[in-house]
Length: 127
Image: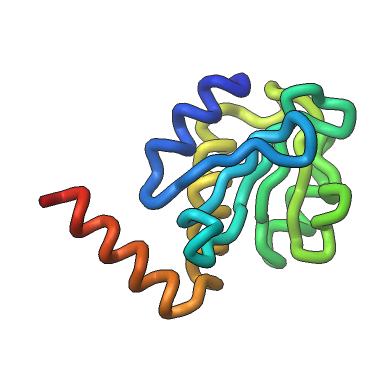
């Protein structure tokens, strides 16, 4: 996996938006942040502290940081985020599953109002 294939995969997930923030970082959100969306993954385009960070949740956090090349994400570790040192640290299929889970973890933390706005947006897209 690389930044472009990551981007393509993440944008194929439901209700995912991206922004460019904090210099050259692609930030992926469940829902637009303007309506209360929350970020679940961050891809650094000039990786000096890992290529990718994402929400792992408390259960997987401890397990993942035991993997060589995975470490607590700077600034986000307290929220159970991990960072991946290189693109080949984890197999692509495992990384995709972890990112799907990250999206789900963050989606569950959205407010009812934000979830309702996402559901309405989804209905409009289908019509």
